[in-house]
Image 1 (cartoon, one colour):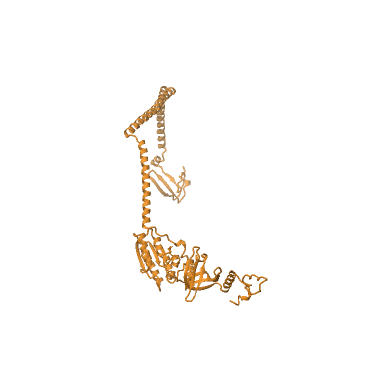
Image 2 (cartoon, rainbow, N blue to C red; image 1 turned 90 degrees about the vertical axis):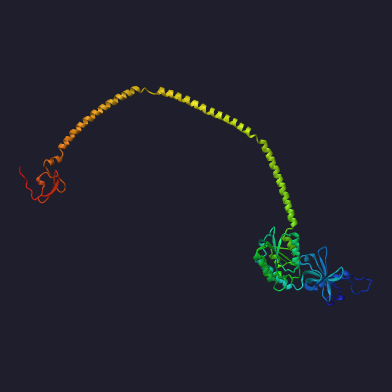
Length: 468
């Protein structure tokens, strides 16, 4: 770096100017303080090496109480100190351990107080996971746009799971941890294992098939999908789309317990609940038997207190009612007295109006008797008038009968039929007009002659008037 910072320049353009020499001293090269030198070198390093990615192995890792990470990054030939401050470390996604292969995005600088050259780390990832991480982010964004991770799709865990399914490898240490936790917390819960490889080629499809099998059989109340920790390559089967969709389509709620607390997979986002570890998944899936017993004991105490309180209240009610309760015989006698009193009042109330009505009726009868006229004489006069009218009607009726007989005799004498019976006839033309004179007849005409015993149609040959 002699070309950038020539010694003869005294770092005049990049660092503090040296103190001037005293007038009594001979002029010479400028003299720098150690702090000024270190600061100048730090600025040169930071300008010369912008943010770069550096790979290496973690060594001497320390996490300070302040939250800052201090470690060395080394390879087979060299090492360099590094620091990652709390603000950056809390977004790392995992906590590195001794011997981890990592890649860091860093600024090359110098720690001035000690003069140590170091890396100021801004981001860290496991070595070789750049492409995997990009694929992880791309798939996560895709499924998130489809709504596969929406909170509204998350299902609540059953409050009392009787049977729990586990999707993991039979040889996995995670299975032993889960079974141990379930046996300790809830020995009454039945466990069904859906065995499947959890890493290696084709593991994702087999994991998805195991989840589909559990969903199709529907023999569990809850499903745990779990495996122990490992590198991102080891956990990659749980970052496959086929596993995420199988979890989302599962018929029962799913808890994902994959890796350690800092490990996140696509399966965690698709599951109804994420557990930081397989053991934590078993704990979230069950309520400890001791807790259930304590809850039942508390409920029993509440019920006992409530029952005692209710019995006390009812006892007080019985005492109050017993004080109001009287002997049935005395009660009946009391009611009889009341009934007699009411009967007497009713009789008195009905007798007085009846007596008053009878007096009023008698008074009105007497008034009516004084107001009625004397009908005896009127009845005698009526009888005389009736007899007189009957006599007059009989005489008038006899007189009219005699007149009717006379009229009848006159009618009989004037009856045309009697005249016809004496040999006379009635002649009418064809229009029914009675003819009286020969002049009304015409030759070759027809007339009707009515006799006593019937009538006849007669043709007129000729008409000759007869002279008297």
